[in-house]
Length: 281
Image (tube, rainbow, N blue to C red; front, side):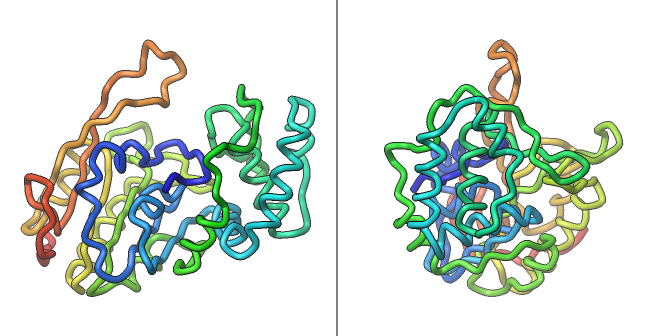
């Protein structure tokens, strides 16, 4: 099932090219960095804990789950009225109802430049209009998305709180911002927040503790030695996966790149196996 949002750094390419890595949900999927939810919609689990620090994102997912017809009705109105002038009017608007706020979020996401999510210091969405002329897609199925989300708990919170609740039967899929130790000042922008190298270290510690409680872990990250070192202890498998970058402004700069997948429940061939207890090195 395709997600209803676009999201920079999303994992549609992973579920399309490396779907074999993402099996093995025995009870509940836990995604602490939700984004578009590409992995959730691919796996279609019966139960899930989906979280993100972006409150508007989580509210949008909740509205799609709880009020899909109202969201679609409002999105159709946006689609009929779409123009450059209309886009900037909607961008400035502040709807009162959850369903109309969700439709605004989806409309702006689908018609803004490259599906980027960015806000200014006042927390206002400030991405310019893009080239898309429609806010609706032929494959849209908000009723199906709502049904799948019925089994999901949706929370806006830090990843550490979500991971603290995991244990046997859970599959964690973690896709954090790709901070590496040697970059600039060791941080990247994540929604309205800063995701620092210290957050990368904190995430690794959380995943170590979760595996000690019996949870399965699959995590995507930057193919960097500093990140690899965080998961170099016993029990971790590190796989290199390729993708084609679409974030460069010029097509000439869009070259194949690699990322890593670290896991306690995958073999070196990418096959599912019993989760191993990972000891901190």
